Length: 94
Ligand SMILES: [Zn+2]
Image (cartoon, rainbow, N blue to C red; front, side, top):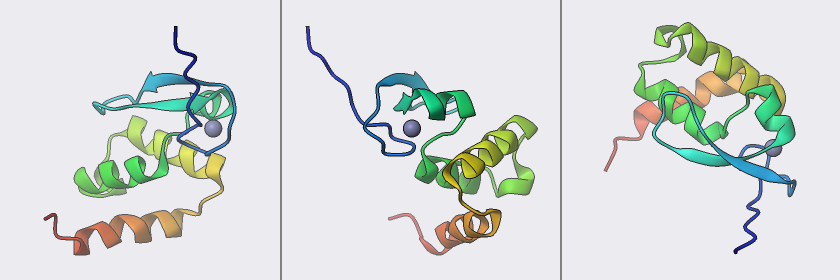
């Protein structure tokens, strides 16, 4: 048996993690207990999915809650988040 214990992909702490799927996203990540309990998710993923949905205001309520919980847990301001989502627009795929 492999003893795989990846770092938490949300806060990057080397804590005991478990792999969980993100609601509505075909992706799974390693979460430590504090991130899991806080409903926090990997920041880059939250940004790109919010962008893909057309921005925070167009997201479903449960996704907005997930964004808020992630930002609060990681101590990231909403204005930085909005900037990061906007920055995705300029990045033209390819
Ligand atoms: Zn964590």
